[in-house]
Length: 295
Image (cartoon, rainbow, N blue to C red):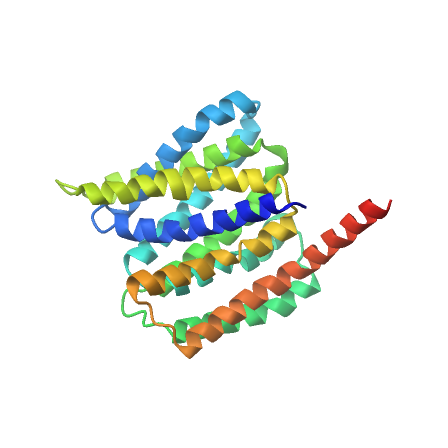
């Protein structure tokens, strides 16, 4: 595998981490649900021409399945934006959200009878211990942001399981477009029912909003799709572990998030658990590639 996909995936993780910063700044004046709704609706509209021109239109069954995944994604992101609106501990939140990767196998077991392997149960205690250290090393206050992050991660884990189950049968750009659109619709409806937009919004906030739509959403998903088409799932999953690391660095630089010993230990345990969980898949892909070169 050449270096281009690795560089692209690393850039994807940077854009994803930057999205935390963009969102945190944008919701200083924009209502959180309204921000999610307008951000993802615009991103879906930008992706629609690409899907329409390059891929076959999904069938009714495929559309319903993609819509269901979009509802789960929208629910997770609305819980996530609620969490970051109440806390400056974005780094800890990013590591908590990354545990959704480990929650997905449980969701797949319940929904699709795909029982996780033994290796999964060995890595899960490490992740739980890491979460406990992250929560003890962070001043969450009375905002319940820890609860919102955990709820968002759990919902995202379910969404990942559903997404993986249906992704093989639905054109990828259409799948992304429909899920982003449903996220936007959910956010817009919730905003109309529960929020009030301010009379004036500063130009700087619109700059953060534009960065969220164009850079952290549209460009990120396009690069993600491109990189995934040129590398194995195992390599991609390992590189995606960089996102919470970048987010923690950004949060430390911009919001003075403290890096205590407990938080660093917790982040290390979560990162280690995720890496160990992906290790068998990585080793399997390496063996298959070696067999292919020697055949």
